[in-house]
Length: 199
Image (tube, rainbow, N blue to C red; front, side, top):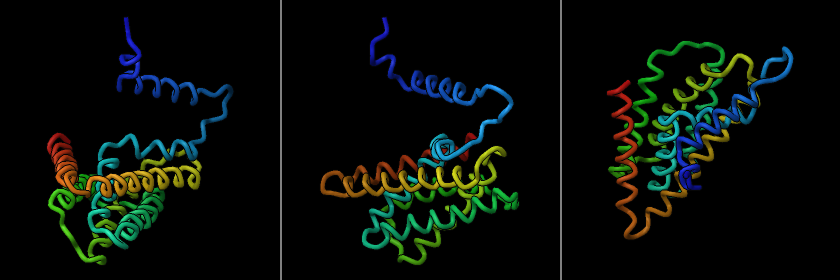
């Protein structure tokens, strides 16, 4: 007999979400489903590389402290939007996926090694990664999407992931918990390497 714990397993939750998504997409009549805000929010959450990179941006920002906690994520989001606009208009930029994978590795290492960069190079580096993540989001935007609503959705999801990373970084940066920040960064970098190797 299945317990409540069994029913709440990750596989069950994913299956229920997939069924719910399919049901929500099955409209009566010939009107196509218009992908809106909620679809935009979900899109980046389905990519493990994006989730890991966003959390690492927040963790690293917390490690840098001060104004960097806002400026570094803001640089990412600003250029994410620029990249999404380019991607949505089919502007071809080579190496999008390799740069995204590199962003996971580099951001993880920045956290694991507690690298401290001045504000300008930190925002430029993270902004560059944001541009490439945005290019991927824009290119993957469904043809039936409402560009404004869908785009706002993945921007909001990105900001929330950054905020979660900053919050985790502030908590883990205290006293005896500090090694946990390094471990989290190393885990992100290891994930990036696995993605690079396994493709």
